[in-house]
Structures are given as structure tokens and as C-alpha cells.
Image (tube, rainbow, N blue to C red; front, side, top):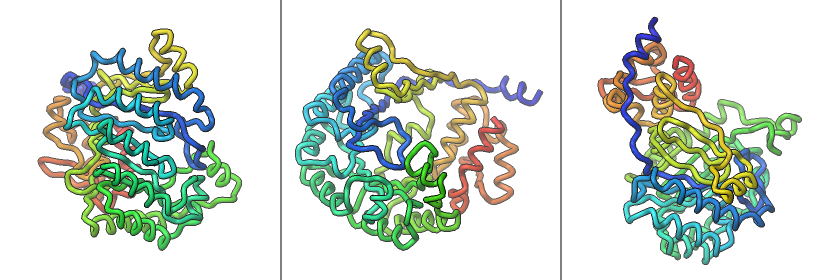
Length: 392
């Protein structure tokens, strides 16, 4: 009866039109040892057809978009591994959907940044580049399967700056094979010495179907214990704060006003369009993910068909649960008024059991405006988020 009563109170507002797009480029020079994203090495003979298909998929979805777009994010894979003419073709096409206020992001690996690629991105209007450094320690880069060395990070950084790029970010990984707190602090210091506007610090996620996962499963690699991971995480929080970066999400830190607007779209559970094989979209409460099959993707687009995909419609408590779960990843947490305006119900009424339990434990904080995870509980947030979804 309680679930039925709550469901009767849910009155979601219509989803707004789509103002953000994500483009998945599934090509890499080589596959990293920890990566379980859909990316392919040594298949760049398909790149031209893939870029053409992405541009056609975008064209066929134009009517769903609110223009100019608020954000464009090109990820992968390694977008900058595309041959320069293809990279220019893709970015110039995407650039037609932007204006000066649009956040236009491209992910890059240090080894793929050249004078030419840096200039192509700048000319196309890209105004945010995120560099996958992962570590500034050679043995850690080798263990992760990265093909760049530490010096290459700084070289790529200078190349981007020289081409006119002002808004740059870095990704780092902690808990990687052979790492300890001292070497992690060294990578943090080296990263912050470059004065990035954005820094992401992710714990290594070991998936069984990866080279590192197989090493872990065979006993050749032992994952960093939880206490040491907590020390690394806390070091990131403290070091970034001292450098003037503000934590705005569990793993993300930015200079004031430099948060990644595209990622905020995800964490606010707002609409976005995904383009390319394995790309996900969230439109009209339907989460649709193109299947990770580049040949099937290209074939469908060339035949004027939608690419093969899996979809799920989110309604009622499921949509609310995902919305509150994503919002709790942000340090500002859930805006109670905005949530109530969106769904017609206060989040405390919808998820009172879980929220109250963690508030009583001191792991969540609540006032009239917001509900958020306490800073000391950020590292164990996955348990809280899972419980929210369970109650949903």
C-alpha cells in the first residue's frame, strides 16, 4: 500500500529538449590493461566509415536537439587517435551545433597530441581538453598498459597551451599496481604543478575480463587494501583543496566555475543524446545504448536505419531513485525543491527510510534545502547509493 500511495503522488514534469550530446570514438592506438570500455586497437581502417556514420546519426536526430547545444563531449576510446583530416571533419561537423557559450570537450591521451591535432581542435571551437595522464610514475604507467611516459604529459600540455587551449584537465588513477601513498602524492603534485582547471581522481576498477583483471584473478596482482585506498583518496581531497580546486563530485575537482558541464548533465539526470557505437542516450525517460558493434553500427546507419541498441524506460520510483542516486554523487547533493518540482514529491518522503538511517549515522546531511553525503562518507558512497536504488 505504501508503494502504491507514493506512486500516486509522483507527477513528473515533461523532460526538457536535449541540449547535450556525447560522441563515442571507439579507436585507440593500443588497449590499456584496465580498460573495459568499448574501444578497439588496430581497426582504424573503419574510422572513416565510423565518422561518416556518426555525422549521419547526428543529422537524423537534429529535431530532438535544442540549439545551440549546452555541451558537446567527444570521448572514447581516443578521439585524438583519428587521422587529422577525419578529426577535423568530425569536430567541424559538431561545431555547427554550438555557439561561444557551448562547452565543447574532447578527451585525449598524451601520446596522441601533436601540433596538428591541437590546432585542429582549437580551430573547430573545442574549448575544453581532458588529458588522460593516469600517473606520472613510469612503472605505474607500464603496469596500466599506457603507452606514454611521464615527460610526454608535460609535452602534450605545452603543445595544447601553445595552440591556444586555455581550459585543460587531467585524469589520474590511484590504487594502480605497484603504487603506494608516496608515489600517488608525487603524481598529484606533478599534475597540480601544471595548473589544470580540472582534475579527476579515480580509484582503479579491476574488471575480470581485462589483462589486469586476469592478473588479479591468477594472484599475480593484489589490489590495494581499503585503508590505503582511503589514504590516497583523502590525499587527493586535501591536496586539490590546497591548490585551489573545489571538489564538486566524488572524484572530480575544478577551479571555480570550471566544473565539467557535460558531466553535470549526467549527475543531474538530464537529457542527452549519444552518438556512435556503445554510446548511451537518455531522452524522454528512455535510456538507450547503441550496441558495442562497430560494423553493425556502420551497416545500420548506411542503410538509413537506427543502430542496434538496447533500451529501458525509467518511470516512477525507478526514475526518482536514479535521479537522487546520481545527485548524491555531487558534493552539493540533492536540491529538495528542484526534486519536488520535477517529481511532485519531496525526496525525504520518497526515500525516507534510507535517508534517515544514514543521517542518524552521520553519513548523510540534511536541511530544508539539500540532502547530501557527508564529506567523511564520500569514500563509502557506493553503499549509500546502492541502498537508495534498493529502496526504489
